[in-house]
Image (cartoon, rainbow, N blue to C red; front, side):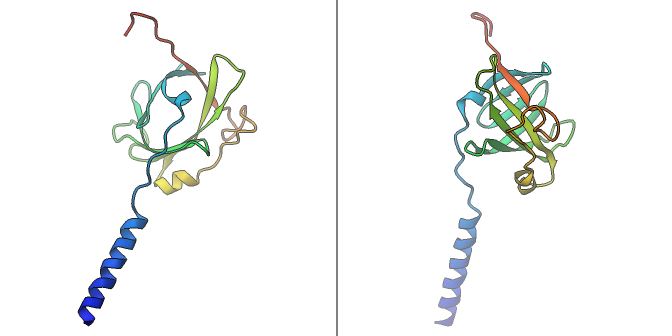
Length: 151
């Protein structure tokens, strides 16, 4: 009887532990952030639900979208020239009435040691986008329009 009880308690603890570490269901990224873009500095970006590519070859593997809070968490690709394998937090803001720019981003963290450290890096100040990225402006993004017949 005592062994059965110990096995039952052990099984319960194991299940509780597994449930608390289960991955969260990924949120759907905002459609305005997906696609091909060029920022203020002429750098190209391709963003999809799983990856942010900053051209020519800096890749961030998106692990969590937080659309309500307007940020994402990503792990830097192992092949990145700098900060490989580290963690990044990218905050964004919508830019209504500023065509051709529809949104802007801020790298709140780009070399965090852990995902949790990146989550805690909350430097973006959306109320002051000209200086709200740790004293610098958010980088504005404009969509790249593909010409017909060019692929």
